[in-house]
Image 1 (tube, each protein chain N blue to C red):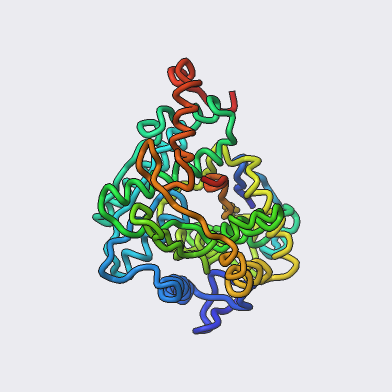
Image 2 (image 1 turned 135 degrees about the vertical axis):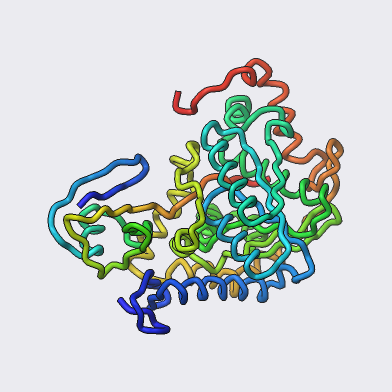
Length: 70
Length: 312
């Protein structure tokens, strides 16, 4: 399957079926820090993904701009 | 995984609630959390026009979307920070969002107010970029609301933002910051508008999922200056704790708000005055924004003529 990652944006190829939870573990991504997107749907950890899939792991974390005090 | 409400296929698992929801029940859960936040802190009434500070990111556009759907009169405020392509793209996202929903969007340019765009402010003052940016945003939000006659400004701060801010304040025992941290800051001066954070009950994962499922076209790329920001380090630490113990961020923030904040609030009694230079509210003679603008003016004249990528 093709997995799209960001920061920096890149793609990795991974072979074989596995659960989303296991895919995230392999890529060392904490589960609640990304949306797991396949097409127009979100996948939960127990969903199984395979060779034909294109999966985007979209980070949900943003930050920076509100730091500092007046 | 099945939706807790209807048993259909779930789109999102919320470990801190030990639940999973399908798309319709997740969006309903999301809106209910926003309604609860508005109600609990009496953030605004249905008659008040809410100025929503939008950045083009998932949180602020998700917030604007919910408030529109809930029937609140709103107006968007976009602060153009002048951060290269990032600002251009985020502004376009906000303009497209507002146009599609027939909402009014006000735009304020930071360089017009301070004398230089944010990247040049950092070069001129050597103040950390996020710090100067945050200061400028708070100042310009308040000024814009006053200028246009709005009494309340809503920002898209979520549970993770608030937990990370709290974590940072506790790490350094910044008691003044702890006394000020709240989902709703009342107007304590005629020139200080109410500031509210209706997403404080919702995690970053939840706001991102909501924005995605609602088809909101938000800017996914991060601000080029955010890399290495302290708030991100704090979020990372909290996310590791959350992975090991779901709900820990929620308990940290809500425990503070319910049990600890009142104690810090009692210890602070700040006198507010008006800045001798611009007339906005401050605790001293000259406000921090005017001091920053003055620094920029004195030090950056040659620099403001140049522009370039921050990585260069």
